[in-house]
Image (cartoon, rainbow, N blue to C red; front, side, top):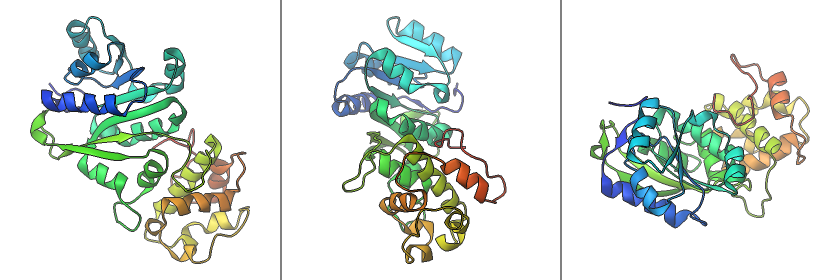
Length: 291
């Protein structure tokens, strides 16, 4: 039976390949965490490579099944979106290597959460819908390019590994699935960049939220409340004639620094909440929430 929207991987060869990709991509090979193991198809080859791994699963039925199948595996009943990766890394003694065949409806929220915890994560290998992978990897100027594209390209170092056909899952999804590897970082993929504080990343995400809410409008229009309410300096005039999908991830980093300044004092949510009048706008809880 399908568990909470999850498509279970049923191809053993592909499960071994995913496990090997994590092994090849993890610098230490230690502190491996599987999120949403389901029936354990991926867990089995992972355990052969990482005997000390741990798993977190929200479906109690699957937790009980995993306990029976893998008596030596530490399985915790938990909501993936409620996990504190900083606490886990401290408990396990270092940065985590994470692998997941996550339910597709959780993909965006999980990606934001992983990026938020970049300081505590070494490597991530996960499955996503191919259309989502295309969006994450799309360059600016493409219609698929959006907030998640910018954030993952700046702070995730995404790498496409391979595709998985629908026939490799039970039940079969109505799409091809892609396997990606990420290396979360606090230093944006910009030449000469230095790490951004949590406050600066919050400001950047809040700026993207405003810019892409009305993606067909020029930035001159969508950013007008910000530019008239305390920004430190004016962005290049030619940028303001562009739509958000025409601005590169690097330019968004520069734009955020222009509007909010280079300091780490925060204030992105406060300023945007005070100046942005779009219906339904509310500050992010942490600056990184996907909601």
